[in-house]
Image 1: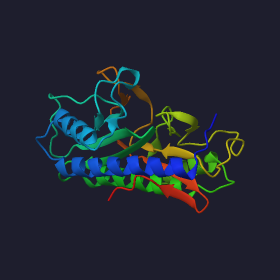
Image 2: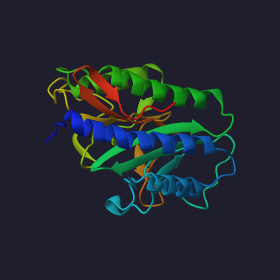
Image 3: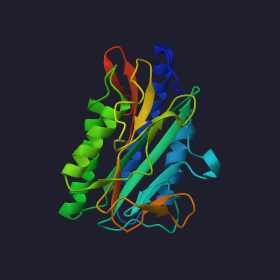
Image 4: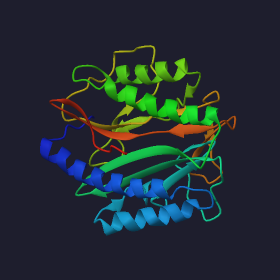
Amino acid sequence: MITIKSPEEIQLMKEGAGILVSVMETLKGMVRAGITTKELDRVAEALILKSGARPAFKGYQGFPDALCPSINEEIVHCLPSDERILKQGDIISLDLGVFFKGFYSDVAETLPVGRVALEVFTLIRVTKEALRQGIEKVKIGDTFEDVSEAIQEYVESQGFNVIRELCGHGIGRELHEDPQILNYTLPQKKAGNEIKEGMTFCIEPMVTAGDGRIKKSSDGYGFDTADGSLSAHFENTIAVTKRGWNVLTNLG
């Protein structure tokens, strides 16, 4: 069941999202060759706790850390490690959430480590733009299939593929709520959930230069592209208000 939040509840989510954005901006500034993903995780957790919030992912389905850092062919949900050292030319997805005053927020962004090849930068740019185009389709009375269609059509028009086995989700008092928000359209398009005022959810295109198939990561938590191709991931927490969509996790 899709839960509807009151304006007061959305305001609480906005407060938590503000904390999340502040932490993510710090992490983004730390991304460089030579840093480990565990160091990023330690900073993320310390900043979240200092703010009075708590890490959303830590303890969720047994996940032991605050940050999900995924490098190159890793798509999402990978473990941080002192052994994973970023190298010049890598790309890294930082996926982070917080729990604050009874509500969750969630955000992700993919960053280059130093200079990357043009085709790698293009993958990042296309994924970020796919998120923007999906958000633009959030309109009261329309359906989530309109969001899915916009993401898929744009990504494929640029020569890339969406990951089909992972998707966006509702969010609020639970980290993952209904509905599931696909990054591609089903044959029964427009038969799905109508977008209504008070809904809160995460749109998160995951895009690959390969064929889109996935496999479990060696750490037992994350997912990789099956063909070893690069993958990028962007995510925002969205609230639907009388005026339309409101991005709660706007990153600079």
